[in-house]
Length: 237
Length: 298
Ligand SMILES: Nc1ncnc2c1ncn2[C@@H]1O[C@H](COP(=O)(O)OP(=O)(O)OP(=O)(O)O)[C@@H](O)[C@H]1O
Ligand SMILES: [Mg+2]
Image (cartoon, rainbow over all chains, first blue to last red; front, side, top):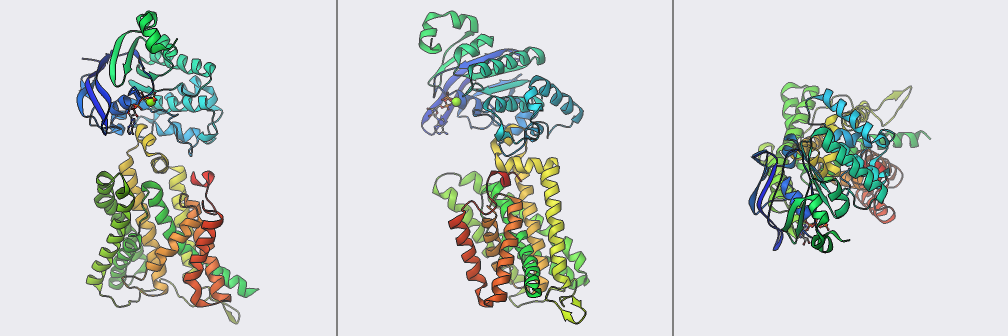
């Protein structure tokens, strides 16, 4: 089975069942929005999928191969790249160094140079700030840097944890558009965790709604947007 | 006037040794959050290994790289066989804070005991690479000797090499990223465990260099580097604990202050003065004289 398949995944934080038997799948090239309130278990799900948190039971495969019980740095080498929540950049390093980090492990330095240029074309503001330290960047710029760095690892599966967090509406729109265009251009499979449900569902192919660690529903994002019951309960408008 | 300059020169030479030890401690602290009390033990063992080479070959410049490489290897082994296991097993609650302290203190004792068993407790002379008779200008001989010059020059070279590695190479970028933010480094594909071990190896090498540089100026015994551990800590704290430049400058500040107190006040005050300098820094500027974000990134 190609794509991402999560089956009956259980992840605990001590006694808390943060992810409690979650199953869903995302086909290659699709953009899936994972929607849910605070504490729904979205971050825990991503951390479990990318080796940052150990899993109790269940399975998760990417193109048929298990993702679980592997180190994040090895998953990166298989094209599975996680941009964690809270602007995943290292403030003490310069913009240039943050970007370079994503390609350190790669042998093909020519391609690293090519993809770095693509990233700078996509986010020209990073190019103007290459030697600045990352903690001088605005929130939106940091998010661009975090996404930019992930692209330099040439991901095939990109997992983004709340890229819109703390950003102004205009900047959110910019980030979402960038994600959408990347998905199309690079045939990326994207798992986009968001509290900004409407924004995320608008660019997503499918939506996965979770609550208290369990699946509420999964379906084409248009259907979710048009479902009045879901709108009232989970989409918040 | 010349007394001041002489004191300054001696302070810089002494401070260089503190800088190296401080560098070793900071490298470990910022990458693993471990205060490595065993550093003095690792350094003394490396120095004894250098001592064996120098007594058999009569060649200091063969002993130097052997000690350096032994120090690196010992550092790497300590990380792999002790610190990694602690990080995996004792990683939460009060135990997580105290376990590395006990473990590295215990290792210090263990290494000292092993060194004592192999070489005995008596004081030994370590061959000087160059003379310790002060430079002579006309009819005056100053306290600063070729050995002091060698110490300063070697330290400067070591610091330059470290700064090139850390600032200009991919390995350096990986080392800094792993130290500042291991999780993000991991998510970017950096092999953080391996990188940390390399950091421990660098620290072990720096400590070993301090050992083989300072030992010819006095003597060698299983605990002859213990005081250097304290000075190294004081220098590291003065430097803000996080930065390599801070470690180097902290060593110089301590070395120069000590030299002036010894010269102008009393030679029995070395230890109390180090302590007073430490307390003063902690009270006035707890982040270290050279602390803060900007230095941290260096
Ligand atoms: N490190 C932790 N230790 C203990 N409990 C945790 C930890 N991290 C998360 N939890 C708990 O697990 C549950 C799921 O948290 P998680 O962070 O995955 O939610 P989330 O959907 O990402 O929320 P948010 O939208 O606020 O980011 C919550 O009940 C939370 O309190
Ligand atoms: Mg979250």
